[in-house]
Length: 624
Picture 1 (tube, rainbow, N blue to C red):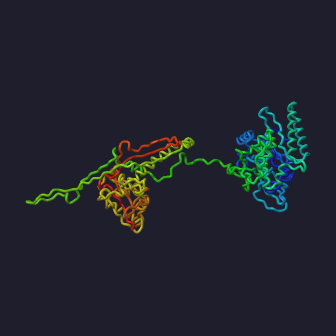
Picture 2 (tube, rainbow, N blue to C red):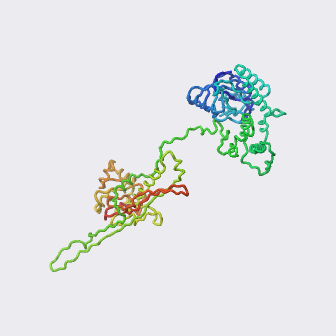
Picture 3 (tube, rainbow, N blue to C red):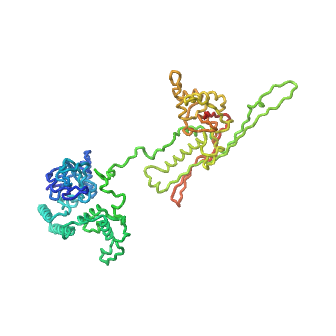
């Protein structure tokens, strides 16, 4: 027998019918006796780091027993620690060149590796063969064979002694039990023992024999599992429900009078909490280990409901090959975009340009007044001797704009704020609120908010006056002739902007605000031999007599009075935004104690309007 091993256990058992109908025959792997094979984890053998040691095989009448030796790699050390804590309990083998009869009897095969696995199969063994052709004595296929026997550690943390642990109880004939007992006696005889150790060993052997007898049928030597296997599904449900009821009957355990309050065979018996076949096989195995069927059943219950009845518990046979629920072994997804999450938003560079260039005043009620002296009546007149001199007449123009409150509101549950630890979610939310408020204001200044006037969220054009739809006294309407295609229309747009500039009375050098599509069409313009007319946006801006071109996504698909918007030429120094003290952008926090929620409000109360006549040019193309 090997020495100094780290653990031992059954690699595969003979004479047990697998769930797929195959039976591993006795001595199917006998020729592998003494063979040393790699020890891996979960049969992952495409990475050397998953080789955690080696295993020595020992052929026994019941099957193949193995002794595991863990290596000194980090994986081997991790496996040793997990075995010591009971996190890993089961083994399986990978074998090829299998020979099988047409009746499902596996006669021969070569074991190539032993693997530590997270879960054993029920009952007793399971063979997983990716592909097989059925026929008489077909061979040369491969498979993974699982068992549900737990491992036994060979090391004792207390005294440092190494001794062979007794393999788990096997439901075999008496002769095999005697052989095992003799082997154990021979092994134990080579080690010094105290009188108390000998008594304890005898007690353990006697207790184990008693358990073996209880698991045997008195007449035909069938195990309890064999009897359960002969039941139909309805009978199994009834049996399993009885066991679950017994596990909760404390009075019966204490010897008190058994009072059956419910007939478990009534038609209204609960159907949702019964044990499955796999549960029972594992419970019987645990009963042998623990010594109490009641305790074994209770281990499989969660709040009175059997664990395998939960929707989240895996069904060990849902997969057709490999490892069922293999996705549980996949590594956790890793964040590659950084935290906090990046906003999916429109381009907002234009927002800072608009907000940074408008004229601001510390008062919100704006009044502008001008005298129109462009009329003929305002002209100077020539005098003829003897005629009456006429007085000049001109018109005063005045416009008043009052403020409106514009806001964004948000709320978060306090529990969520506490639970989100990767980043400051409050700061993240506040940054989104400020960003969207600025975008809404900039949109309202240029083209309006786009909502219907009947919408209660509408930003009134009487308080924030859009340049696009402002009166003709302030915004000059420039018609762009519609061409045969967009490129021809783009050429017409350049010409119209240049020609309409004579009407412009705004301050300094203006800016062209337009869409990305129109900028693209203008930059693609070519001369007669295919050369681009404009090599850059700045060349185009110089041609159109503007300081720069700014693309504005919210200007797309804007129309007014049956005309489509192409662009706005304006110097935003002529657009005044006014807010009284306290009416500037402010952020407010509040806590709702009744609902345990934080509420956040960002708002401003302001007005906006062009204050200089003929200070903007609106380029439009007719739809028809």
